[in-house]
Image (cartoon, rainbow, N blue to C red):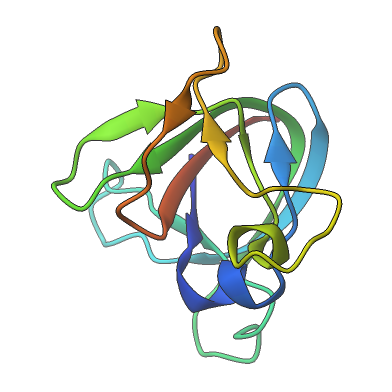
Length: 116
């Protein structure tokens, strides 16, 4: 699972859709405990002292992580440009994966599961 969001995604992050093939460069923010794996997508802070990892594979799941910490599945994560309302071809709305109902967004944090 890869965390996507914040200013990096809103700046110039790409869209992510279930079933699509992706290649993500991530900062490895895992702790010393092997069970605490944590990857955060980054395309700006690659010169940091953090180890980077590249994940290639198919998107199996996409979810919005709400402000209260709960997670809700979405069909796709629009690009940062679309989320900000600057993409004439994409309305930037979040939708449930199975029925297309709108999902309210109260956070800029998302989770993308990539099967490698």
